[in-house]
Amino acid sequence: MKKLVGYITTGFPDRYFTIDLAMAMAEAGVDTLELGMPFSDPVADGPVIEKANLQALNSGFKLDHLFEASAKIAPHIDTLWMGYFNPFYHKGMDNFIAKAKETGVNGFIIPDLPLEEAKPYKPSIEAAGLSLIDFIAPTDTKERIKEIVTDAKKFIYLVAYAGITGAGKSEDLQPIIANIKKYSDTPVYVGFGVNTHTAKDKAEGVDGVIVGSAFVKVLLDDTLNNMQKISKISSIAREIKEKINI
Image (tube, rainbow, N blue to C red; front, side, top):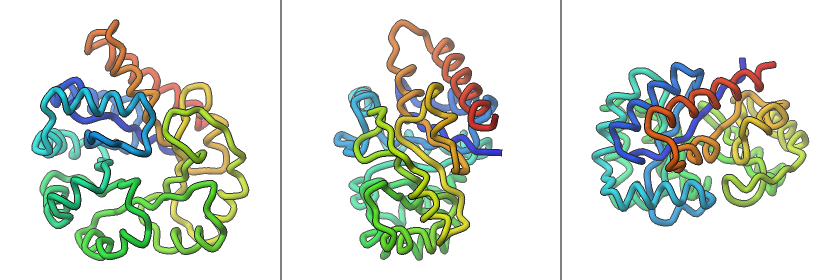
């Protein structure tokens, strides 16, 4: 069965809601949860996730809120922290590794940490039994793909198009998927632009999909109360999980 990874912005609208939402997403069929670490300059994210990041920060988000929420969530669903490298660098990767082990989180997604800059950190991350997710972009050459995926762990994050999340672009990913699978048996999940309308096509040839903006749009909808937001996100998750496995 193909997997569904879901991203949500931690602490938006508050950390207690994040816990309730995560539990509901697990029940709705989300296999892995990306807990987004709010950051002031989320360079890979589009306006939807950027807005949620800024609202969480303006509401007083602190890293301790991420750790507290994770301790409640991670026992119930495979959990990864998705964030930009700045906090990891300033607080120390060893600190994040220790906190991940303490809370039950299984690894990190750091989109602005390329392979070369990740190399000093990977040994200590993997020695702790955690994963640092590797990215492949449509612009990567065959040689670059081989270099990135040879030692990839957990899953490979295939970016569906060059650009930012939520842009809704479309590219033929089959040649790049074939190239990845030449060099690695690690599952390949596609992200960027995955929603209820695109999920079935995006899932072709891969092992799972990653959904972010489609969920966060619901979080930003001020016409819905918190219970309605949880219900709608759960419904979207169930629909996408069904469509990618038809």
